[in-house]
Image (cartoon, rainbow, N blue to C red; front, top):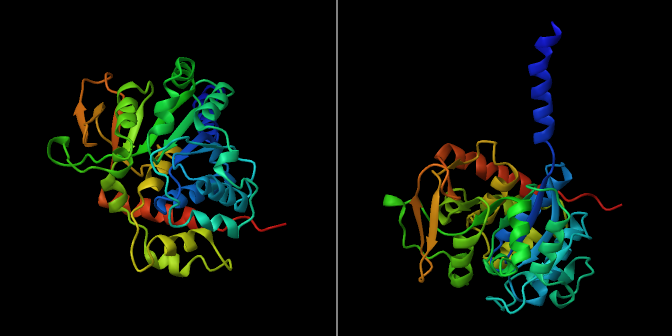
Amino acid sequence: MKPNHLIPLLLMLLASLAQAAPVKLIFDTDMGNDVDDLMALCMIHNLQKRGACELLAVTVTKDHPQAAAFVDAVNTLYGYPDTPIGVVRNGAAKEPGKFNLLADKYPHDLKSGAEAPEAGGLIKDILAKQPDGSVVIAQVGFFTNLARLMDDADAKALIAKKVKVLSIMAGAFQTVNFDTRHLEYNVKLDVPAAQKLAKEWPTPMVWSGYEIGVAAAFPHVVIEQDLNYMPQHPLKEAYYLYNPPPHDRPTWDPTAVLYAIYPDRGYFDLSPPGNIKVDDDSATLFRPVKKGEGKHRFLIMSPEQASRVREAIVQLSVEPPPAKK
């Protein structure tokens, strides 16, 4: 082979190596309000073991002290006990949730969210240390933390400089003329924050709507049969406490994480670019715009893609944590 013929192969190799770099991820969650947040965190840690992502921090929008403690217990179980955790102050949801008290059954050292830093300050500090355009944020809870972060002009400038994309689970979109009156939970709990984020967030945003997680529901038989490799597993225990099987749980939050880490694997298609407006009643309305003008897109998923997405989420959720040394 002539030397000049090697150039395209070398370029392809360099491109593949660049794509293999771990995704620098911040995970913003309302842990405890639904078990899909836990599915998503299990996925993240198992992908982190593979080198697919680097979890820079977990920030919590559920304003109950055990939410952060439970996150720390899960991080510790999967071998990442030092993952930074930030919390909301004076947030929208203050009830304990159905499974966050499980934290007491697993080793961890963050005993209460009161001991954790405020989420916005933590995110700002982390962004300042990262390369430009390198960070992906997956927001799967309320909009409170990120909306408040933008109140700081310096932080908003950091977002524009450091964040590549914001992948969020929120809203609902795929109905006639792109309109829907479905009032999705993550939006409804803090409408002013959702309105602010939708209007002012400076980077591209990809929304995983309500309909996506419903279409790729997690099979209950997996929870019942595939997590018995441990005497107790937080995902199985949380699933039973939240809503006992048999029921297939929508994979709302894991779909946003799957896109955040693997945007180019064909799991989803994307809508045309546009703008999303959040109404006062929390409805999310998408309007297409001219190419290059809109920062918002939403996920689209065919039945064939839904099967792939469901299986990917299942396998990445139930993969065992590392064995204790």
